[in-house]
Amino acid sequence: MATIKVKQVRSRIHAPKTQKATLDTLGLTKMNKVVEIEDTPSNRGLINAVHHLVAVID
Image 1 (tube, helix red, strand yellow):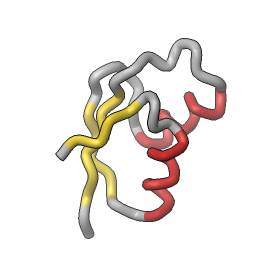
Image 2 (cartoon, rainbow, N blue to C red):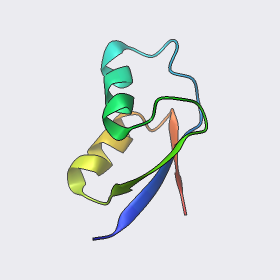
Image 3 (cartoon, helix red, strand yellow):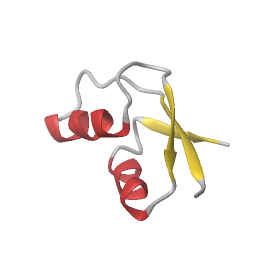
Image 4 (cartoon, rainbow, N blue to C red):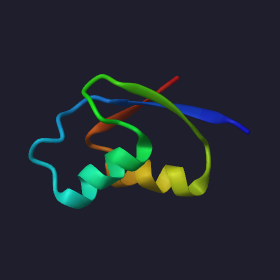
């Protein structure tokens, strides 16, 4: 299956609890951390929910 690399580019400090939980679900716990996740519709939805805090890397 295809994978996506996601990087946290903004701080989670002032984000709501739901967005913090979404970042935890994606495996993003620190700034500039990069994780590789499967390219599924559910993961795309998680990324879309916190699109202002993360960046998709090629």
